[in-house]
Image 1 (tube, rainbow, N blue to C red):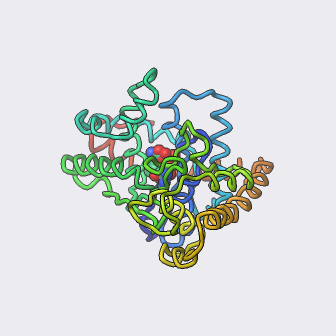
Image 2 (cartoon, rainbow, N blue to C red):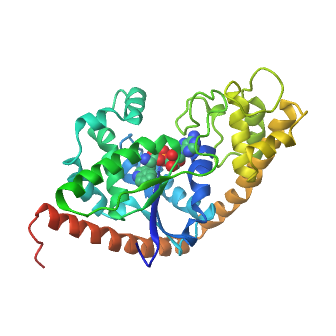
Image 3 (tube, rainbow, N blue to C red):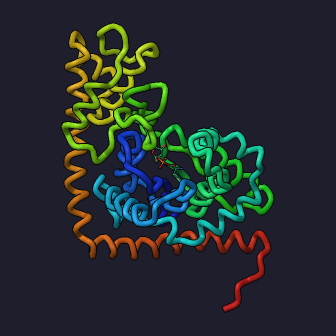
Amino acid sequence: MINGKKVLYSGMQATGSLTLGNYLGALKNWVTLNEEYECFFGVMDLHSITIRQQPAHFRKCARNLFALYIAAGLDPVKNCIYYQSHVSAHAELGWILNCFTYMGELNRMTQFKDKAAKHSDNINAGLYTYPVLMAADILLYQADYVPVGKDQQQHLEITRDIAERFNSIYGDVFTIPEGYYGKSGANIRSLQNPSKKMSKSDENPNGSIYLMDAADEVVRKCKRAVTDSGNEVLYSEDKPGVSNLLEIYSACTGKSIEEAEKEFEGKGYGEFKLAVAETVNAVLVPMQKEFERLLQDKGYLDGIIKDNDEKARYFANKTLRKVRKKVGFTDILH
Ligand code: TYM
């Protein structure tokens, strides 16, 4: 608890261009949470270097992500938005927790298997212990809830296992976090292959809508989205393409899937796809304008970064001190 509120923690990797999946599965749902929770959102730049980054480009990506959080509607005064690498407690707790995590557990992580297959020339130890650093992120802030998309569920489960193991040895050190999933949008699929999630690193750029895509690009991608046999706009297992578009439509408009199905009763796929593109653009265009405006305002962004870094460090170090004591590290004398 912080200021009488439960704590919520999440973040995104600071690489590549964010997709509509990142937005609908995570970012969009974060915006109003500060009314009820004390919220922390990291720009996860430590995690990003598990894949090789070009430094200048990486620096820009991280700053863009920071600005995008705000452009998407996160209030940087009511939420603590900060760079993970600015708070050294993450790396320190990450190391400690490595010693409380079993290789057998890490071997089961599907994201590691996927990424290792994609980057077979660079299967580094960081990629392998990625979930442990993620556990450190969450546990440092004593988070009660972690709003993420379904693809992160396994990482959340290992976080709980690590925390429970640590607590069973040392007493109540960590809050055991729970996943927090949005009503819709938690599992947005590729527009070209709905059996895969919409992903930043998809080789086929038509499969993903990027948050910085121009409006006509969004229309083009929606028109080309694979649909299924038949011509009815219905949500069902044998219609994965149409179901995915319905999911996108529902998440962007706030309408339920049933309402959306009714709206398109008797209408064909063509009309439906255009309506999906329109609702996506109604979300993206204002966000892109605000993003551009923010990037011009260097002083404002730098000020927020500084203030929020301090706030994050304060809470993270509080937990780290407790962990150090419990483990039995010698006190640091000043
Ligand atoms: P990342 O950067 O891969 O994804 C950021 C968020 O976007 C969600 N997401 C999706 N949701 C729905 N449909 C999709 N197609 C889709 N693609 C991505 C992800 O579930 C995620 O919520 N490991 C995390 C970053 C992280 C983190 C943390 C998150 C590091 N430490 C601590 C929470 C708490 C990641 O790779 O996210």
